Image (cartoon, rainbow, N blue to C red; front, side, top):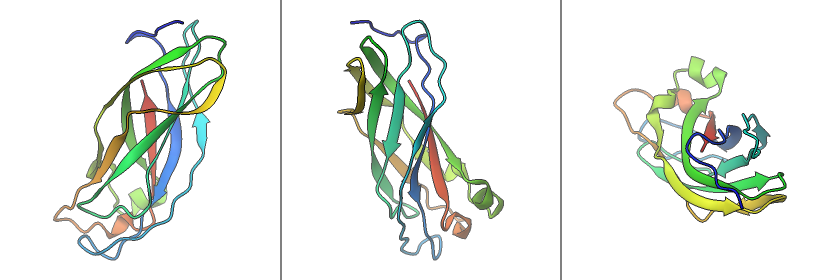
Length: 153
């Protein structure tokens, strides 16, 4: 079994994780979500993993939702997920409408889990959380926004 260090594999995966709906910055929000994953990775000689993350629909300003993670390892050796770092992105139409990625935060998650060789959809035991800040600004621009997490470890 091979272990990756901090300077090992960089994992980048874009997963559409939720669709948000809004009536106002303090109103009840509803949403439905679905997603896909497209790997974009830089690999060392050990190979690369594909990370995916998802959270339930219905995130409202001032609220948070748990994030579950999975990993795909199509390599012939086991690889290790260390700490997962997430960068939040918003689809272009909603950025134009005033939705700010900075209103959403995701703390780093220490996964520290080995993913066996040639496996897909391995659920990571560690979970994360995404929070949607309830700011004094009008957040109606986030209604219907597609939230994208770019994950690395």
